[in-house]
Image 1 (tube, rainbow, N blue to C red):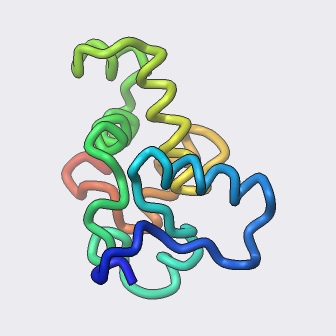
Image 2 (image 1 turned 180 degrees about the vertical axis):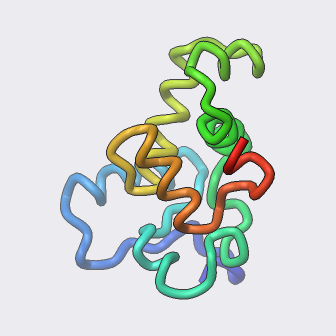
Amino acid sequence: MLARGASGYLPYSLGSAAILAAVRVLAAGETYIPVEMMAQSETMRDKVPNYLTRRERDVLNGLLAGQSNKEIARIHNLSEVTIKHHLKSLRSKLGARNRTHAVCRAIELGIADDDTAFA
């Protein structure tokens, strides 16, 4: 579906809060696919190379390196509020409850860069 131009996939099983979050992601021009669907087959990196935005990947790499929001913001010349926004979006896409869970999910789903996963 994605290869043919779809922006994402919303299964009937999504709850109302998840649908609202997915629509927000799609309205922002990003791709939405439930993490459970991606984990069923190939890794996210192989299946959907643009699943995460560049900034979400920057934040993820910062998390993998053990950096605080302030450190990530300073490195990328952004505000901490902006980093928190990207972190919230990243957590939503990964189905993570917090930043530590986001790191675990990224490693588990194969979207963490191998060289930063254990930095």
